[in-house]
Length: 411
Image (cartoon, rainbow, N blue to C red; front, side):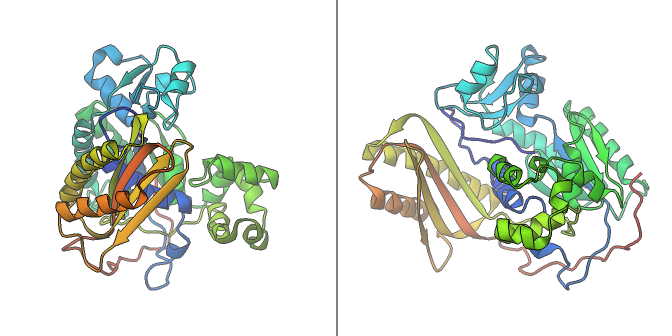
């Protein structure tokens, strides 16, 4: 999956392109834990049948690119991110992961776990370039590609436009082409729905493949610890453990009434996930929900002048991303995190799209001035444009070809 976090005292903002369309969209995926209760049926309410779905996930993408481009780093524990006191690990090589270093971990903790850890400053221009090469490979096999981030995507290969005959064979060919053209490894999951394919791609990492055939999904899911389910974080897993739920099988044994009593609206997703059910289609024109960026400071700031200078810098970077993505939106949101980790946000929505960079900056400045003077110094500032529209894209759902409900060859 895409590894991104606050970059500490790095120059890069946390919400790079991969974060925006992957982990911000991916944040929605996480909330739904791989299954969207509202999309378990097609737009006309009928089940779309089984598909051939591949989920491709690059292995330690940022760190692997740095090791590829710098031979001196090969075989060494590497972290991409800020090495300073406020730095956070954005990506960790597999050599670093052996020491327990993980993405989103404070850099000081990572360094304590792995004293020989080498930190690299992120290079998103290169990551985007490599991501573009990878997406070109995907589209050689299918037009149905749904990127989640710079380094992962769903592919629907049910149509098999090249006549290869096997989704597993297609996944292997994709992995070989990625290695040949980029010098990097990728892992893949192959199954009949997105939820299972995403779980499978993580099963045999790095540089591996896992196939879950029709009829095998429920057994596979029920063999897993619930913390492997997308969207169930440490706190969620702790709550489930208190309820005696530690595996998918434990979850499947609870009826829907029990789940709703303990998990509210999350219950329907949990019920389906425990049975390996997910009928969401792969959507090639996935709409970005927002474009933004945030920065964690090496030292807390509180003076009005420093805050305004930082906001100006964030505006410059975020507006470049807005223009690059050709996004238009009506809502500007400012986020601040105080030294005690309290989050505060303010938003302003217009009845029309923000007219340009000057208005975007003015709205951000207005939101900041409303919060001054601050009760405490801050350690993070972020600015986001949301309520987006994309000119030229259809506003309604795209009709999709129904799949034969017979078992599809995955071998």
